[in-house]
Length: 125
Length: 224
Image (cartoon, rainbow over all chains, first blue to last red; front, side):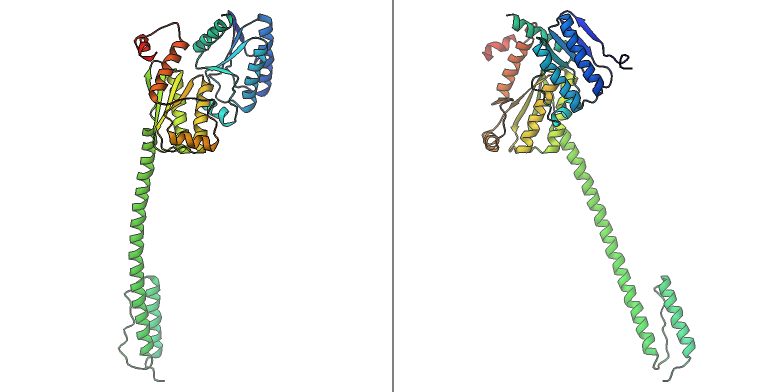
Protein backbone atom coordinates (compact mmCIF):
# COMPACT_ATOMS: atom_id res chain seq x y z
CA UNK A 1 0.00 0.00 0.00
CA UNK A 2 2.69 2.46 1.04
CA UNK A 3 4.91 1.22 -1.72
CA UNK A 4 2.31 2.24 -4.29
CA UNK A 5 2.20 5.77 -2.96
CA UNK A 6 5.93 6.41 -3.00
CA UNK A 7 6.77 9.90 -4.14
CA UNK A 8 9.42 9.78 -6.86
CA UNK A 9 12.74 11.51 -6.21
CA UNK A 10 14.48 12.48 -9.43
CA UNK A 11 18.17 13.31 -9.60
CA UNK A 12 19.18 15.94 -12.13
CA UNK A 13 22.80 17.03 -12.01
CA UNK A 14 23.62 17.98 -8.45
CA UNK A 15 20.00 18.39 -7.46
CA UNK A 16 17.18 16.19 -6.33
CA UNK A 17 13.73 17.06 -7.54
CA UNK A 18 10.75 15.94 -5.48
CA UNK A 19 7.36 16.72 -6.93
CA UNK A 20 4.53 16.01 -4.54
CA UNK A 21 1.50 15.15 -6.64
CA UNK A 22 -0.73 13.46 -4.08
CA UNK A 23 -2.38 14.64 -0.90
CA UNK A 24 0.08 14.30 1.92
CA UNK A 25 -0.82 12.42 5.04
CA UNK A 26 1.37 12.08 8.10
CA UNK A 27 2.75 8.63 7.34
CA UNK A 28 3.64 9.57 3.80
CA UNK A 29 5.34 12.74 5.05
CA UNK A 30 7.55 10.83 7.48
CA UNK A 31 8.36 8.31 4.81
CA UNK A 32 9.22 11.06 2.34
CA UNK A 33 11.49 12.74 4.87
CA UNK A 34 13.66 9.67 5.39
CA UNK A 35 13.49 8.84 1.70
CA UNK A 36 14.88 12.26 0.75
CA UNK A 37 17.62 12.14 3.39
CA UNK A 38 18.67 8.69 2.21
CA UNK A 39 18.74 9.89 -1.38
CA UNK A 40 20.93 12.85 -0.40
CA UNK A 41 23.38 10.48 1.19
CA UNK A 42 23.32 8.06 -1.73
CA UNK A 43 23.68 10.61 -4.52
CA UNK A 44 25.67 13.31 -2.75
CA UNK A 45 23.22 15.92 -4.01
CA UNK A 46 23.93 19.56 -3.20
CA UNK A 47 20.34 20.75 -3.37
CA UNK A 48 16.79 19.48 -3.01
CA UNK A 49 13.82 21.10 -4.74
CA UNK A 50 10.46 20.18 -3.31
CA UNK A 51 7.58 21.16 -5.56
CA UNK A 52 4.34 21.56 -3.61
CA UNK A 53 2.43 23.54 -6.23
CA UNK A 54 -0.40 21.00 -6.40
CA UNK A 55 -0.79 20.73 -2.63
CA UNK A 56 -4.05 22.45 -1.75
CA UNK A 57 -3.68 21.89 1.93
CA UNK A 58 -0.70 21.82 4.25
CA UNK A 59 -1.31 21.25 7.94
CA UNK A 60 0.98 22.05 10.83
CA UNK A 61 2.50 18.57 10.77
CA UNK A 62 3.50 18.74 7.12
CA UNK A 63 4.72 22.31 7.64
CA UNK A 64 6.88 21.22 10.54
CA UNK A 65 8.11 18.25 8.54
CA UNK A 66 9.16 20.51 5.68
CA UNK A 67 11.06 22.96 7.87
CA UNK A 68 12.60 20.08 9.82
CA UNK A 69 13.75 18.49 6.62
CA UNK A 70 15.43 21.72 5.56
CA UNK A 71 17.48 21.81 8.76
CA UNK A 72 18.35 18.11 8.47
CA UNK A 73 19.42 18.47 4.86
CA UNK A 74 21.45 21.57 5.76
CA UNK A 75 23.45 19.46 8.23
CA UNK A 76 24.04 17.01 5.40
CA UNK A 77 25.32 19.88 3.24
CA UNK A 78 22.33 20.09 0.93
CA UNK A 79 20.14 23.17 0.52
CA UNK A 80 16.37 22.67 0.44
CA UNK A 81 14.17 24.96 -1.61
CA UNK A 82 10.41 24.70 -1.40
CA UNK A 83 8.87 25.59 -4.71
CA UNK A 84 5.48 26.84 -5.85
CA UNK A 85 3.55 27.20 -2.64
CA UNK A 86 -0.10 28.21 -3.11
CA UNK A 87 -1.21 31.55 -1.60
CA UNK A 88 -3.85 29.85 0.55
CA UNK A 89 -1.25 27.46 1.90
CA UNK A 90 1.13 30.31 2.70
CA UNK A 91 -1.61 32.19 4.55
CA UNK A 92 -2.54 29.08 6.51
CA UNK A 93 1.05 28.39 7.52
CA UNK A 94 1.57 31.98 8.66
CA UNK A 95 -1.70 31.88 10.63
CA UNK A 96 -0.46 28.68 12.27
CA UNK A 97 2.71 30.52 13.24
CA UNK A 98 4.83 28.35 10.96
CA UNK A 99 6.77 31.00 9.12
CA UNK A 100 9.61 28.58 8.35
CA UNK A 101 12.39 31.12 8.83
CA UNK A 102 15.17 28.71 7.89
CA UNK A 103 13.63 27.46 4.67
CA UNK A 104 14.27 28.91 1.24
CA UNK A 105 11.31 29.28 -1.06
CA UNK A 106 10.88 30.02 -4.73
CA UNK A 107 7.93 30.86 -6.93
CA UNK A 108 8.52 28.07 -9.43
CA UNK A 109 10.94 25.30 -10.30
CA UNK A 110 12.95 27.51 -12.65
CA UNK A 111 13.52 30.18 -10.02
CA UNK A 112 14.28 27.48 -7.48
CA UNK A 113 17.04 26.02 -9.64
CA UNK A 114 18.39 29.52 -10.26
CA UNK A 115 18.46 30.09 -6.53
CA UNK A 116 20.37 26.87 -5.87
CA UNK A 117 22.86 27.64 -8.66
CA UNK A 118 23.50 31.03 -7.11
CA UNK A 119 23.89 29.53 -3.66
CA UNK A 120 26.39 26.95 -4.82
CA UNK A 121 28.31 29.55 -6.79
CA UNK A 122 28.53 31.69 -3.65
CA UNK A 123 29.81 28.77 -1.61
CA UNK A 124 32.43 27.93 -4.23
CA UNK A 125 33.69 31.48 -4.51
CA UNK B 1 -87.06 49.16 34.50
CA UNK B 2 -88.86 49.87 31.35
CA UNK B 3 -87.38 48.17 28.33
CA UNK B 4 -89.31 47.78 25.14
CA UNK B 5 -88.69 44.84 22.87
CA UNK B 6 -85.89 43.73 25.16
CA UNK B 7 -85.28 40.41 23.47
CA UNK B 8 -85.23 41.85 19.98
CA UNK B 9 -82.81 44.67 20.92
CA UNK B 10 -80.40 42.38 22.70
CA UNK B 11 -80.40 40.15 19.62
CA UNK B 12 -79.70 43.23 17.52
CA UNK B 13 -76.72 44.19 19.74
CA UNK B 14 -75.36 40.66 19.48
CA UNK B 15 -75.69 40.77 15.69
CA UNK B 16 -73.88 44.12 15.45
CA UNK B 17 -71.06 42.99 17.75
CA UNK B 18 -70.68 39.79 15.73
CA UNK B 19 -70.48 41.80 12.49
CA UNK B 20 -67.85 44.12 13.98
CA UNK B 21 -65.89 41.18 15.29
CA UNK B 22 -65.99 39.69 11.82
CA UNK B 23 -64.29 42.81 10.49
CA UNK B 24 -67.08 45.04 9.20
CA UNK B 25 -66.56 48.25 11.12
CA UNK B 26 -69.46 50.07 9.49
CA UNK B 27 -72.12 48.22 11.54
CA UNK B 28 -73.89 50.28 14.25
CA UNK B 29 -76.85 49.59 16.52
CA UNK B 30 -78.53 53.01 15.88
CA UNK B 31 -81.55 52.45 18.04
CA UNK B 32 -84.05 55.34 17.96
CA UNK B 33 -85.94 54.18 21.01
CA UNK B 34 -85.43 56.37 24.11
CA UNK B 35 -85.37 54.41 27.35
CA UNK B 36 -83.08 53.01 30.08
CA UNK B 37 -81.39 50.61 27.68
CA UNK B 38 -80.64 53.12 24.90
CA UNK B 39 -77.67 54.50 26.90
CA UNK B 40 -75.90 51.16 26.67
CA UNK B 41 -76.65 50.94 22.95
CA UNK B 42 -75.21 54.41 22.37
CA UNK B 43 -72.13 53.55 24.43
CA UNK B 44 -71.52 50.43 22.34
CA UNK B 45 -71.84 52.51 19.17
CA UNK B 46 -69.28 54.97 20.53
CA UNK B 47 -66.91 52.16 21.41
CA UNK B 48 -67.15 50.79 17.88
CA UNK B 49 -66.42 54.32 16.57
CA UNK B 50 -63.31 54.56 18.72
CA UNK B 51 -62.20 51.10 17.69
CA UNK B 52 -62.59 52.03 14.02
CA UNK B 53 -60.45 55.14 14.47
CA UNK B 54 -57.77 53.23 16.33
CA UNK B 55 -57.59 50.54 13.69
CA UNK B 56 -57.32 53.11 10.92
CA UNK B 57 -54.52 54.88 12.78
CA UNK B 58 -52.67 51.66 13.33
CA UNK B 59 -52.92 50.74 9.69
CA UNK B 60 -51.49 54.12 8.71
CA UNK B 61 -48.57 53.87 11.12
CA UNK B 62 -47.87 50.33 10.00
CA UNK B 63 -47.70 51.45 6.38
CA UNK B 64 -45.35 54.27 7.27
CA UNK B 65 -43.08 51.93 9.19
CA UNK B 66 -43.00 49.43 6.38
CA UNK B 67 -42.01 52.16 3.95
CA UNK B 68 -39.25 53.33 6.26
CA UNK B 69 -38.01 49.77 6.67
CA UNK B 70 -37.88 49.34 2.92
CA UNK B 71 -35.89 52.55 2.58
CA UNK B 72 -33.45 51.49 5.28
CA UNK B 73 -33.00 48.09 3.68
CA UNK B 74 -32.24 49.72 0.35
CA UNK B 75 -29.72 52.03 2.00
CA UNK B 76 -28.13 49.06 3.70
CA UNK B 77 -27.78 47.33 0.37
CA UNK B 78 -26.12 50.39 -1.13
CA UNK B 79 -23.71 50.61 1.79
CA UNK B 80 -22.69 46.97 1.47
CA UNK B 81 -22.29 47.33 -2.29
CA UNK B 82 -20.16 50.43 -1.89
CA UNK B 83 -18.05 48.77 0.75
CA UNK B 84 -17.37 45.90 -1.60
CA UNK B 85 -16.52 48.31 -4.41
CA UNK B 86 -14.22 50.22 -2.10
CA UNK B 87 -12.47 47.00 -1.11
CA UNK B 88 -11.94 46.14 -4.74
CA UNK B 89 -10.72 49.62 -5.54
CA UNK B 90 -8.55 50.02 -2.53
CA UNK B 91 -6.06 47.25 -3.12
CA UNK B 92 -4.73 47.49 -6.64
CA UNK B 93 -1.67 45.35 -7.22
CA UNK B 94 0.28 46.56 -10.24
CA UNK B 95 3.26 45.18 -12.01
CA UNK B 96 5.45 48.23 -12.52
CA UNK B 97 8.57 46.66 -13.87
CA UNK B 98 9.91 43.35 -14.93
CA UNK B 99 9.77 41.28 -11.73
CA UNK B 100 8.45 44.09 -9.50
CA UNK B 101 4.94 44.46 -8.08
CA UNK B 102 3.63 47.50 -6.23
CA UNK B 103 0.71 47.60 -3.82
CA UNK B 104 -0.01 51.19 -2.79
CA UNK B 105 -2.23 51.33 0.27
CA UNK B 106 -4.33 54.42 0.88
CA UNK B 107 -6.67 55.04 3.80
CA UNK B 108 -7.30 53.32 7.08
CA UNK B 109 -6.44 49.69 7.34
CA UNK B 110 -8.61 47.20 9.15
CA UNK B 111 -8.36 43.44 9.48
CA UNK B 112 -10.82 42.71 6.70
CA UNK B 113 -9.11 45.02 4.27
CA UNK B 114 -5.62 43.79 5.03
CA UNK B 115 -6.88 40.25 4.61
CA UNK B 116 -8.21 41.01 1.12
CA UNK B 117 -5.06 42.97 0.30
CA UNK B 118 -2.90 40.06 1.34
CA UNK B 119 -4.86 37.57 -0.76
CA UNK B 120 -4.77 39.88 -3.79
CA UNK B 121 -1.05 40.38 -3.47
CA UNK B 122 -0.26 36.69 -3.06
CA UNK B 123 -2.41 35.70 -6.03
CA UNK B 124 -0.82 38.38 -8.15
CA UNK B 125 2.65 37.18 -7.16
CA UNK B 126 1.81 33.66 -8.30
CA UNK B 127 0.07 34.93 -11.43
CA UNK B 128 2.88 37.21 -12.61
CA UNK B 129 5.85 35.34 -11.16
CA UNK B 130 7.31 38.56 -9.79
CA UNK B 131 9.78 37.94 -7.00
CA UNK B 132 9.83 41.41 -5.49
CA UNK B 133 6.80 43.26 -4.19
CA UNK B 134 6.63 46.69 -2.60
CA UNK B 135 3.97 47.50 -0.04
CA UNK B 136 3.71 51.28 0.01
CA UNK B 137 1.91 52.61 3.08
CA UNK B 138 2.51 56.32 2.51
CA UNK B 139 -1.23 56.87 2.43
CA UNK B 140 -1.97 55.10 5.68
CA UNK B 141 -2.57 57.55 8.54
CA UNK B 142 -2.32 55.17 11.50
CA UNK B 143 -1.17 51.68 12.26
CA UNK B 144 -2.23 49.69 15.31
CA UNK B 145 -0.98 46.35 16.60
CA UNK B 146 -3.48 44.39 14.58
CA UNK B 147 -2.61 46.10 11.32
CA UNK B 148 1.11 45.79 11.97
CA UNK B 149 0.56 42.12 12.65
CA UNK B 150 -1.28 41.77 9.35
CA UNK B 151 1.55 43.51 7.52
CA UNK B 152 4.00 41.09 9.11
CA UNK B 153 1.81 38.19 8.05
CA UNK B 154 1.64 39.48 4.49
CA UNK B 155 5.41 39.73 4.31
CA UNK B 156 5.87 36.26 5.80
CA UNK B 157 3.36 34.69 3.41
CA UNK B 158 4.99 36.36 0.42
CA UNK B 159 8.32 34.98 1.58
CA UNK B 160 6.83 31.49 1.82
CA UNK B 161 5.77 31.78 -1.80
CA UNK B 162 9.32 32.70 -2.69
CA UNK B 163 8.93 36.45 -3.13
CA UNK B 164 10.49 39.29 -1.21
CA UNK B 165 8.23 41.96 0.21
CA UNK B 166 9.46 45.47 1.00
CA UNK B 167 7.47 47.99 3.03
CA UNK B 168 7.94 51.63 2.09
CA UNK B 169 6.61 55.00 3.13
CA UNK B 170 6.43 54.57 6.88
CA UNK B 171 5.56 58.00 8.25
CA UNK B 172 7.17 59.40 11.42
CA UNK B 173 3.90 58.94 13.31
CA UNK B 174 3.66 55.30 12.29
CA UNK B 175 7.32 54.67 13.13
CA UNK B 176 6.70 56.11 16.59
CA UNK B 177 3.60 54.02 17.14
CA UNK B 178 5.29 50.85 15.96
CA UNK B 179 8.24 51.30 18.30
CA UNK B 180 6.02 52.33 21.22
CA UNK B 181 3.82 49.29 20.67
CA UNK B 182 6.91 47.13 20.77
CA UNK B 183 6.34 45.60 17.36
CA UNK B 184 9.48 44.11 15.89
CA UNK B 185 9.81 44.95 12.22
CA UNK B 186 13.50 44.13 12.06
CA UNK B 187 12.88 41.00 10.02
CA UNK B 188 11.25 43.10 7.31
CA UNK B 189 12.97 45.25 4.73
CA UNK B 190 11.66 48.78 5.17
CA UNK B 191 12.47 51.74 2.97
CA UNK B 192 11.77 55.42 3.52
CA UNK B 193 10.03 56.21 0.26
CA UNK B 194 8.58 54.38 -2.67
CA UNK B 195 11.54 55.65 -4.70
CA UNK B 196 14.06 54.08 -2.33
CA UNK B 197 12.11 50.86 -2.42
CA UNK B 198 12.11 50.89 -6.22
CA UNK B 199 15.86 51.48 -6.32
CA UNK B 200 16.42 48.65 -3.87
CA UNK B 201 14.12 46.37 -5.87
CA UNK B 202 15.95 47.15 -9.11
CA UNK B 203 19.29 46.39 -7.53
CA UNK B 204 17.91 43.23 -6.02
CA UNK B 205 16.60 42.22 -9.40
CA UNK B 206 20.00 42.68 -10.96
CA UNK B 207 21.53 40.64 -8.18
CA UNK B 208 18.93 37.92 -8.52
CA UNK B 209 19.28 37.58 -12.26
CA UNK B 210 22.84 38.53 -13.15
CA UNK B 211 22.53 36.58 -16.37
CA UNK B 212 20.35 39.01 -18.24
CA UNK B 213 21.35 42.58 -17.72
CA UNK B 214 18.25 44.11 -19.08
CA UNK B 215 16.88 47.47 -20.05
CA UNK B 216 17.81 48.77 -16.63
CA UNK B 217 21.42 49.53 -17.43
CA UNK B 218 20.80 53.17 -18.10
CA UNK B 219 19.10 53.50 -14.73
CA UNK B 220 22.06 52.13 -12.82
CA UNK B 221 24.09 55.30 -13.38
CA UNK B 222 21.40 57.38 -11.74
CA UNK B 223 21.02 54.88 -8.96
CA UNK B 224 24.63 54.57 -7.94
